Image (cartoon, rainbow, N blue to C red; front, side):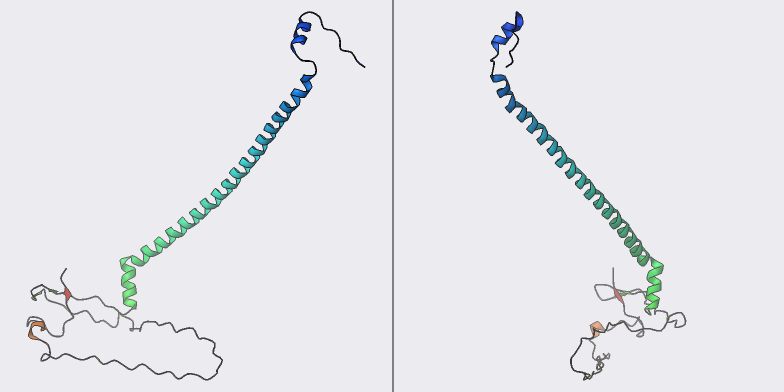
Length: 188
């Protein structure tokens, strides 16, 4: 058995103030508390760091998506601007067989005509042949029977023609307008 050395003087007085056997027992819970707090803090820092890293990667992905979508939007806007340009509209109208209109005439609310209408120029050398609108055929559905179904061609619709005797006098054009002119547009 080992003996403790005897203390003298000031050390002996201080030793009497502290209990002899309680020092090691009271220190253990405190050390465990400090170790648990440090370990919990380190684990919390690791979780926080991982969450920040994941958020950073997600932010980078979203910024790349935003950049690519912005580039796509700008490309589409350039396409829209190119299609809306006057020369592109004129070229597309000529491809559809349209010709520039003549001088317009306007109808006043009282029924009088303002201006002298002019005919549109009919220059077939400059205009391509008029094409009918393109119609997409429905997709063929697989049918179990190989018998073809007969197709009936559409019947042409006959529109009634108006003669001056069937048109009321208030709706007939004035004498200043030739009868072979283009229709007038409403006033603006």
